Length: 261
Image 1 (cartoon, rainbow, N blue to C red):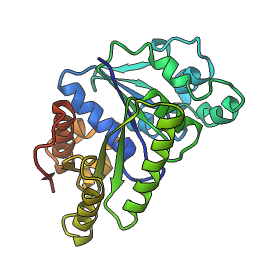
Image 2: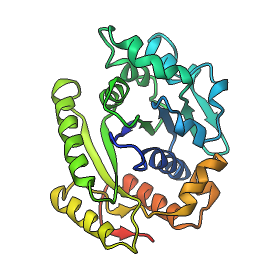
Image 3: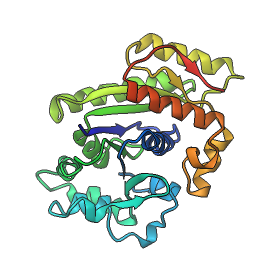
């Protein structure tokens, strides 16, 4: 069965793209067929995997604008990284305007991903907004992964996002679930980080992943080398955390709290 997860947070800089790329990489090392969908017009996931966006003639834009196009025609395969990618291109920035008057505008990505049955996991990296592109991601997905930075205003933003997801469940995708809230950029030196983790767990006890992603310089460096952390620094704390997240995703259980620092 293909599992389709959307990575969503209306706030930028919380680790959405980092999580989608690195989780995808570790799922692949666990013999899973993985497709990463870059739904962000900024194209960070595409760039972080070393792909030159200016050279892309196909990708998510084509899938959204041309419903008859084939999924494989817009997919790139990295044998080195073990994952497939539907890249973002500069043209994606205009997709929301072009789709606004289309009657099926919220279902374009879902239609395209009906051809993705060969994959075990489809990971959709959504933009840091709640516009039409993110709506397509949420309608296409079976579940949502919400990366949340360990900072003071995290809880307020998370509450707003979960309300939005509830509205989308009612209006567009009744089966959409919260796969989990992922606490990111945890700094063990700061008491605030642990307070934020504890507070989020208190308010959403059944929705928070047990793995907590640390603030780690290697995670920040890896994108500039066009590699996931599993290739760039496999022995780093960030790599260990994402490997543990992949294990938690695959096992489907939450045994005990794991903070890697």
